[in-house]
Image (cartoon, rainbow, N blue to C red; front, side, top):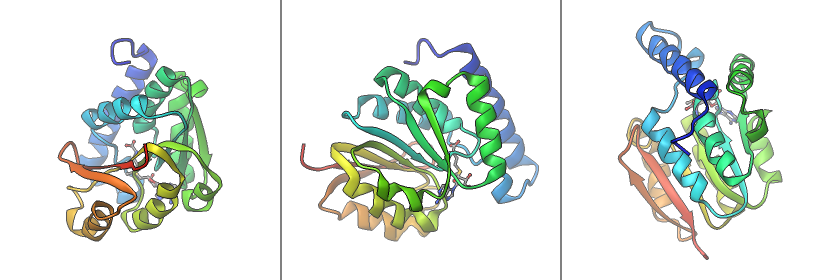
Length: 198
Ligand SMILES: C[S@@+](CC[C@H](N)C(=O)[O-])C[C@H]1O[C@@H](n2cnc3c(N)ncnc32)[C@H](O)[C@@H]1O
């Protein structure tokens, strides 16, 4: 998976990385920034998604598609597609450009929608990545967990970078008997939950 990343994917990842760094340095307003995961988190997501059981791969919070590119690599290995949700039109345009230039349309389905309106229609989720606004995590988690297949994985970003704001969410997940969960101190802090029953 990591040994044969297509050149077009690497090139777009590099471009997005530079744009994200510039956004953080030059005071670009919060909602306009790409707010991407770091590369090590992308690799972690790809490893987990590639190893998840059979079922759907879902992402909430596409931005310009950086994390989606890592999930697309996992989907290429799985023979699958990632369905990724984004609400902001400017980000959707950037993401479309990312997937076109990187040549990953075969492994990505981009949905211009609030995931809270569409997750209820999905079933058999094998892997779900949450990287949206933090006040929506609770609702998104409650929509996703019942739809995970046994052994399915849910990963949520920013558990350490937004530790105080996400503390109630973290405590709820760690005490949730439907999943086994822990916070991995990688990147901005990843909550990893595995659905019980397999
Ligand atoms: C932190 S950024 C995502 C970064 C991206 N995962 C990456 O690493 O490249 C969060 C994105 O989630 C989008 N978003 C927030 N709430 C959402 C929702 N309920 N449904 C879909 N997208 C949402 C925002 O517009 C924003 O672009």
